[in-house]
Amino acid sequence: MASKLQIQGDESVVLRVTHSNMKSFSSDVRFSLSMTLEAVKDKLWKKCGTSVDSMRLQLYDDGRSKLCDLSDNMKPLGFYHPQDGFILHVIDLDPSSVTSGGWLEDTSLVEKYTISDEAFDKLDGTFRKFKDKIAHQNPSAHEKKISDDYMEDFCANIKIGDRCKVEPGEKRGVVKYVGRAENLPHGFWVGVQYDEPLGKNDGMVKGIRYFDCPPLHGAMVRPDKVEVGDFPEADPFEEDEI
Image (cartoon, rainbow, N blue to C red; front, side):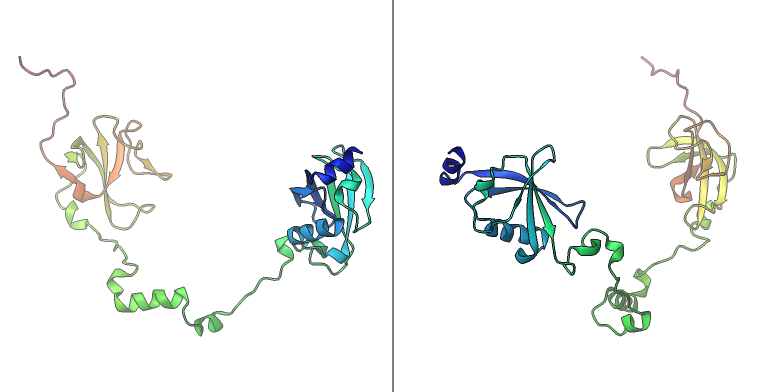
């Protein structure tokens, strides 16, 4: 009597849907208890890809114990007394179904489309052709490379042991290295030991040691940021006159 009242009231139930061919497929779906099993199958077809004619349904309780087969397409879902949290298991009977063989779960089974470089070059509207067009129109702006001698002229008056000031921030220190750095972008670099822990390393950069200094006192900077001169180390005890 209670189930008939539920059906007449068009109440609904949330069932966990699983699938015989897709082990990872699991979805919580709300169904009206007044829906016929044929309507339930049609709703499931749109979610899992198994056709209505190839679908068999089983009902399990929330402890995964099988309760019954849902075999009569004309009966309403409520006839089988499902409850929230029960499992509605879809069995796909079609051996040629799109869900068979794991195609919808294992992308490694899908044949990948490939194209040769020669065929790709014949296509119009590709990013490769767009990039080549930009490079042809403005070659200086496309993949501009830094030369090995980049900023070498800024190093003419910078020597190891010079006191210096580094911008930004007017950080003071001493020059510890001048030259190229094989694991940094091309061009010349200046290694500086700061007077205070304002740096990023101890003279080792990306596994290569360029100089020695206390931790967090070292930095590799471009020479245009370095000014050498009479920049004595600041006296931390120096006080302003009163």
